[in-house]
Amino acid sequence: MSEHAKSTVQKDEPKNDFIRNIIRGDIKAQKYEQIVTRFPPEPNGYLHLGHVKSICLNFGVAEEFDGLCHLRYDDTNPTAEKQDYIDNIKNDVQWLGFEWAGEALHASSYFDQLYAWAVQLIEQGDAYVDLQTPEQIRDNRGSFNEPGTPSPQREASVEDNLKRFMDMKDGKYQDGEAVLRAKIDMTSPNMNMRDPIIYRVMHQEHHQTGDKWCIYPMYDFAHPLSDAIEGITHSLCTLEFEDHRPFYDWVVDKIGFDKPPHQYEFSRLNVDHTLTSKRKLKQLVDEGIVEGWDDPRMPTIAGMRRRGYTPEGLRDFSDRVGVSKADGVTDMRLLEFSIRQSLDDTTARGMAVLKPLKVTITNFDEVLSQWETLKADSVEARWDADTQTLWLTQPKHPNVDMGAREIPFTKTLYIDQGDYEIEPPAGYKRLSPEKPEIRLRNTYVLAVTEHITDESGNVVELKATIDPTTLGKNPEGRKVKGVIHWVSASRGVPATVRLYEQLFSVEDPSSVSDVHDALNPNSLTVLDAVVEPSLAEAEAGTRFQFEREGYFITDSEDHTTDKPVFNQIVSLRDSYKPA
Ligand code: ATP
Ligand code: MG
Image 1 (cartoon, rainbow, N blue to C red):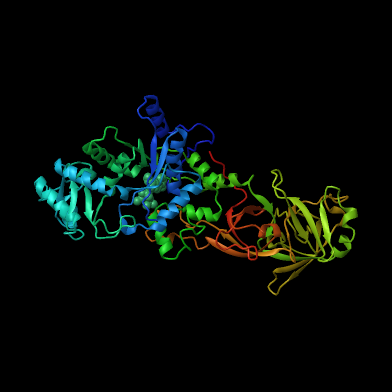
Image 2 (cartoon, rainbow, N blue to C red; image 1 turned 120 degrees about the vertical axis):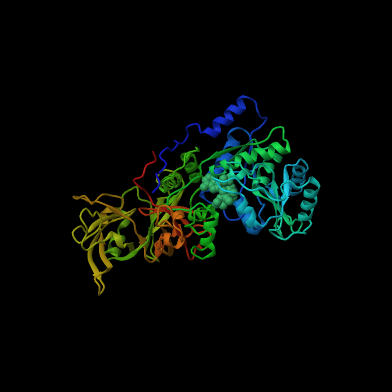
């Protein structure tokens, strides 16, 4: 079990991470005219929570220091890449609240230039075409303890290498028959410096360049050079690239840039009970374990958006996690904390009964015939005689002005099954035969007079009375403890409500070899609920607080006002407090 990262940054403090401090130093030393960063996804999947950190860092730094941040697709491996991924990545970055400088860029649009630079390396004697098989290349790299064995082509002439590289480009080699390698050091203790491959043959169409190329640059070659072309000043990436930095520096040095970009590494974001690997998330999608990349249980930006997470909440989370070189696992509850915080003042309230239990108010007609004379002055309502409905006016939010809603109160209601217990556990504060009275939120005090059970002893209906003097007022001569929510049975709207738990039941799903063994079988529960009309009427993608239940959003795909569908965003509260 890995230790949870303890150091979280408090919001609103100036950010003092090591990267920002380096940039402050560079600005002070007038090293650059402008700070330029980039977010460089490979379009081989949807962006996930880990990318949120990288996006917030790259775009955040550019914003903070009046610089620019590019969105650049590092699209050097056409086999795994797709236009759909490209489109969704743009969408996700914008939804998070960031705007890249100019057009979105593609490493593939530099292929001509990268090819010319590869030729330059050959001419300088810094690269050669290797004709060994992939197995021979692997075996001859040596190991940590053994130096590598030079390729038979390592000392080939510049002319031979130029001809062979041209032949690679012209399709005279099949996949795997030839590669271009940087000529560095086959004995280097850093395996990445043992003549890394910089171009390979790949007879494969590219989503941007079509069939123009049958050779493609390797990521480690294309990345530093793309950074250099774009005038990136600070190339920010995750720690696993630390060992690649010597090659990064070697490439930009050999090509000869005046002001080469510099790579700085920070630790990856890891969060418990989740995965941040496109490859593994793709497996969940491909095997139908989830309903798609945007399944609300997925840690993808698309999934979190559909789940109802807010961009503000995700950015706040990213700020609190901070940036460092320390590896750790961030507590999932910090993410939920940030999301919850962003919702309190921004969501309208409403009542939804998730597990309905029918309640018939036996004295409804009698009480409602005199509601207006007995109510408190503060109560705003109207009686609709045709449908025998009292429409109660209530603000949508207790202290933020969001307008009002009308809540229908009728003879038959639903309350939640969990709010009535025949044999309540100790400390139970809701309804039971011993404690039959409670306040119905926004309306009367109710007293249960009878419960009806089915053959197995489950309560299936309650009969109750309401106290005519309690509309907006406390009852005379006694205190009634507790308030519960309810929805009109006749005027409420049936709704599908999806509750979520973690997708994975183990703390570190990446440590489990078969992902199926890490899944939580209860990650999704679908309920037939009933909601007050103001909730059902909302358009898709509207967030609410269901009173006493939590935060919910109308689903962006499946919700209609006739057949409302809500996704649970996050619970109302949690004892967790960030450090
Ligand atoms: P994956 O392993 O999921 O494919 P990746 O690093 O290969 O991730 P890229 O598309 O290459 O995905 O990533 C784009 C940028 O996002 C890179 O700069 C990468 O360092 C950063 N990034 C990816 N995962 C994380 C993470 N968990 N935390 C922080 N940054 C990340
Ligand atoms: Mg990758």
